[in-house]
Image (cartoon, rainbow, N blue to C red; front, side, top):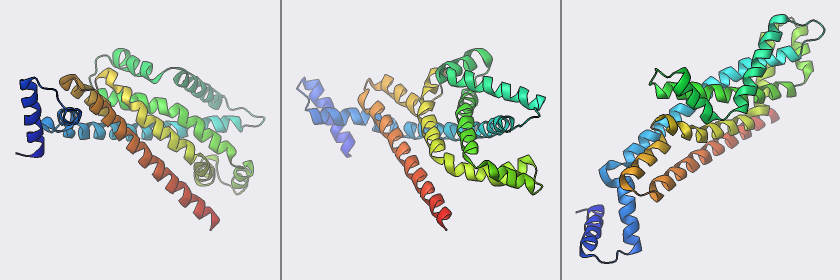
Length: 257
């Protein structure tokens, strides 16, 4: 018999004899039930995969939305005497979108999407990606807009004086400089999004947090599943923070060359 089998046999024997179970043996039993029995650790790994996939796809969608909205709002703000009607309408729509999304809780948005807008759909993963992407897009838009506005306005004027149109100047000159300025804020948004995805438990999507809750409901052991999930989130955030710092140092080194 292996270590876990011996530990469980000793625990069961003490229970049957009605004897007091030592604290360390109780902890080993709880750990066994939470992670080892029935290869439950594989369920946690599946939950981690779902959480990471959801975070990455939502961030990609949010970044795409954020760039589009930031460019529209920046173009509107940089107009001089002549105002473009279409641009004004688009800017108004973007402002309403940002106000509504930033002014309402993500959980409420998720429930509205799942129970009202997509009530006939059971594609919980797709709904979650869409909601978190739209939610993240509002914050990313303001981050990118702030980064664009931080770039010297003379850069835009220099590009336009060379005969370049607005879009190529933004793509080749302004946005690359803005990215360096907004990288810390984007990193924080990624970390926030990673942690915020845990609320998908309310629509039944089996992510990392939902996995811990399901195992807790079967074993009636809350400490190890929930503390284990908290530790996994902490490790993922620490890894992202380390990667973000390394990328920032590399970009800073490239500026000095």
